[in-house]
Image (cartoon, rainbow, N blue to C red; front, side):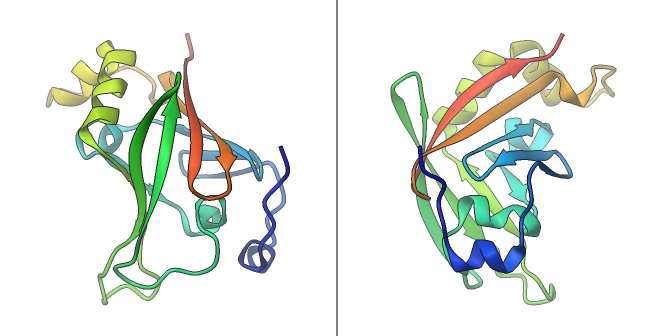
Length: 151
């Protein structure tokens, strides 16, 4: 697999590995996200500004949406990268959003964690227990998804 090259990526001067918040990138083609409550209940997650080049070719404008596919065991799940429209923010937020079928996959893959996230009670389980791995398959339009549970 060839690394994806673009001028936007060079602008950010990424050096790997890189970690921001709950995202970790080992290289231009592989990264993982430690799943949190928003992944299970809000059908998505924020993408830190510094990690945008992993998902975005070029720059995006406020309100722009770019479709992509998450593929798990041969099944394709629709998702997108969306830049929010909040004009109060100097640098608008970017989110990776997926459809309900992918959220159901997360719930089936991590049933105990999903149950904890749905409850309003505080949980003792460490946030690193559930991981979504993402590997670039086709430019910025398709990524392989896989899962790992740390024990």
